[in-house]
Image (cartoon, rainbow, N blue to C red; front, side, top):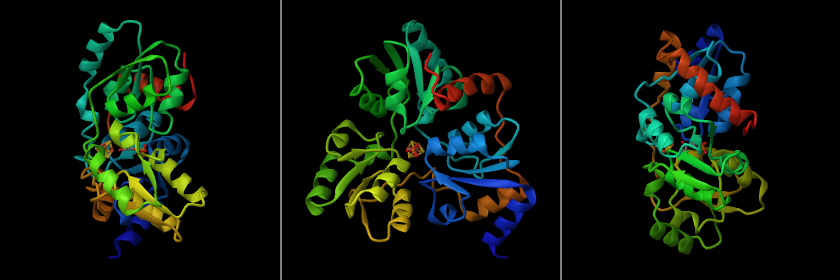
Amino acid sequence: MDIVEEIIRLKKEKNAIILVHNYQRSEIQDIADFLGDSLGLSRKAVKTDAKIIVFCGVRFMAETAKILSPEKMVLLPRKEAGCPMADMITAEDLRILKEKYPGAKVVSYVNTNADVKAESDICCTSANAIKVVRNIKAEKIIFTPDKNLAAYCQRFTDKEIIPWNGYCYVHEKIREEEVRLAKEKFPDALLLVHPECNTSVIDLADEVLSTSGMLNFAKKTDKKRFLIGTEEGLIYRLKKENPGKKFYTVGTAKICRNMKMTTLNDVYLSLKEERYAIKLPEDIIKFAQKALTAMLRNIYG
Ligand code: 13P
Ligand code: SF4
């Protein structure tokens, strides 16, 4: 059996679409109907008229698709593929914080569990966080869960940002010393980093961008060499789409083990046996959808 052919056959038979995040394994990226960052993937989840969405990414991404398209079946091929950063804050933690700062609005990074989104006023992704923070009608903003993204947004606003103390263990592995060494080794390369990186790393960057932001930037610029400060899966796509350009990791490759769990066999079994379907309580869907729709439709009230 050719597993890729079987995936394509099952996909057609069941009217399914395969959405894939930029950090997935190369062979999973190659079978994507749509490959993108968190923002692009949520937009696609709203637009598609497929009956089934197979989400190759981590749980919060599949949950986001389900919240935005509750009538669809959303499948996460590996049920244990979570995001450790999303698990760093609970809905109860957020309720306590909201009581402490009653006038504040809550901006939650999409890298949160559905019940945390349901307690939030608006969501953001790394691609639009600055815009959301600037536009939201409040002088105090509780920002969850990423302290690094919160600190980065704080550079662009006078509003008071109250951060949660979460972080991404993958981006935290990119250290300032390693960045300095990489810059010495490739002095003509531009350094592109993800805003989940530490402040000291962001300070050394030429551009701070989401994963799709990096792809767009690399395509448009005349520059030929880049140091990529994010999860290594993105480099596969950068190289594939820009054959004349060079992309290097900052020191050793940084790997998100959760993003790399999904294999072709998991996708095949997911389509064949319709597993693992995302299920969320109706009230969580209702409130989380408000926060996600506010982001997608630019509603900042
Ligand atoms: P992007 O939205 O930039 O793709 O990032 C998602 C993510 O999980 C980063 O660690
Ligand atoms: Fe979560 Fe970091 Fe992995 Fe993204 S790279 S899914 S933030 S652990």
